Length: 437
Ligand code: NIG
Ligand code: FE
Image (cartoon, rainbow, N blue to C red; front, top):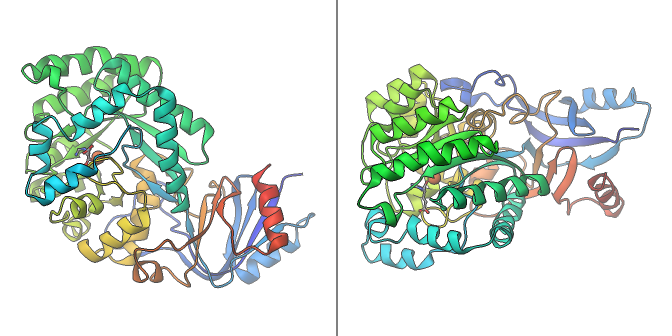
């Protein structure tokens, strides 16, 4: 018999329904498909019913078996959070750079001096697959505690064919063994490694002719990303790399217009990227092109915060009709946090996104940014039962009581995978039971 779980008496359910075919834009981002006092029924790994308390109870009454009950009284239920932009797999850390930046060094100056991404590259090259797995798993465990049930993970700290493949293989192993689903992105074009400093074109050639075919051959990534930035990869180099990836079936993403206005947003529209990310300095023209082409803006306000920069102009983008998603950008240098809820707080308070827009951006629009919206990102019949119960009465509260972890229970594929502390002893027993199915 298939196990059935009934999440009962939720104070508020944020279903974010009706946008599985295309991401939410403009005013649609405010429509969360709210259900006050509702219930959700799960069979195996899927949502089979969502509605008001009365409707959910009536549905359960028709079932031939007793469901396990999770009492969500007083709680907010949302879709599992989705982090559409992380650099999950790397070795070591860079806390010393925080001090250097506080003394006035810029992010790019540190990179040009061989620090930054290049420092993490040295650490990652020296690490074994096992070490990378263990260090990254620790971060994944933390993501789960913060309600993230699916995330995108980029390579880009190997910068040799063998080391890029090593990172992507670790991501694949983590995907196979961890509760969180991982979608991989190849980002060999993350920095010019020191050994090619005097001949960047040769490195671009290696990315295109050696790395990309090897990644495609082993089917190690869905997306191809480029750090298109002054002093890193030019617009022209980025375009060539992304077009080469497309020929091998890899969908383009771009780190665009983060530090200077280079035209990354325009390039994203031109190459048909699924998303352009960062966009702190995106031009009005670039924003307009993204809206026309339906490129998703993946905004990373935690990075702006940590680099002490002005965040992206989210309001302008939403008003221009660009679909907006939010992500941590978890990486060792410019945003070392696994707390997507904190990033959501920044989006609200620093970019003036409304609490409703923030939720659409970190659920269904983030799902679209990684090509998974048919399966995840909303609470709808037929979708995966990836859910978060927050110790909050409504969705405004998680923006208001900021900077603390309000995640109470995380359900992934219909199983309780984190938290569940509110469940009574009998409840805990069955939470463990369904966790073991
Ligand atoms: O998205 N901007 C480029 N890459 C990363 C940072 C990587 C690092 O500093 O290690 C980012 O912020
Ligand atoms: Fe990034």
